[in-house]
Length: 111
Image 1: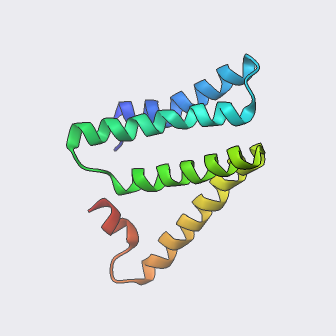
Image 2: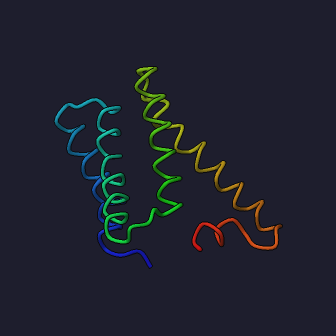
Image 3: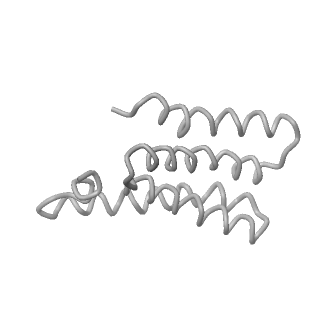
């Protein structure tokens, strides 16, 4: 079960930051970028605490960086919004496909 700081930093804070920033007139793109800083800081917190990187955290951060870079380069918030769905679906299909293997992908990620 995830610990409270993880739920706060990975779920609650990005939502709060996005809502507050857009309410004060910050563009949707930059509000999404700032919201992504909270999961990044949580990954650093977990690394500092355990001295090991979490594979799932690395995957999530990679998705955030790719989507943010594409959005900032294109200037379109569309990439920031659609990339999350595309990358999450791709990862989900990979995980589903790995169920046909001797051990699923999540076994190796969480090991």
